[in-house]
Length: 196
Image 1 (tube, rainbow, N blue to C red):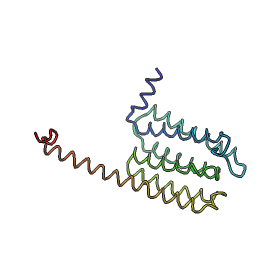
Image 2: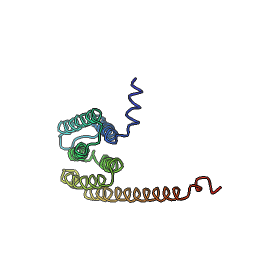
Image 3: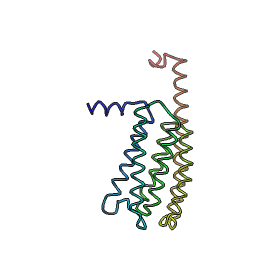
Image 4: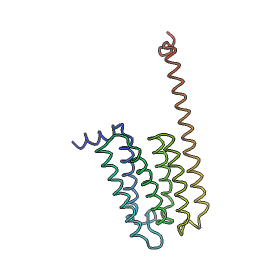
């Protein structure tokens, strides 16, 4: 029975459901790393461990609620998509702000959310998520550790601007190529059989 349920979620055409599952995995990943010992641990800077864990737990709770709502009401819902986007960007911003240096490797999570929004919901969502992420990362720049790491901040902002833009232009080219190929095949059905 659980295998059938698992396949139900994998095969769903509901992009919000897949984003909700993806969100749960990433937030769970961050929470797991908050508990790890050693250098990979997502630890709080300046003794704010309780605040960091409470924020991650709140993000996980919101993620579970979004997942439940997309399961109960699977029809596409733009308000829910925006809430999810804000939760993701706000959650990673919060985590990076309080994690300091230990959060630096996880700054790439912004890209997971930007690209995920773009691939699931279109170019408008990609650019909205991209702009919100770049603006939110400016908040992180004021955190104690990040203030002294201007090159790291600058590098991540450049990646947040360039990578989604490149992905978007590749998506447009792919779509144009598919449209041209479909048009050519429709105009010449003999092209399918090699001109026989």
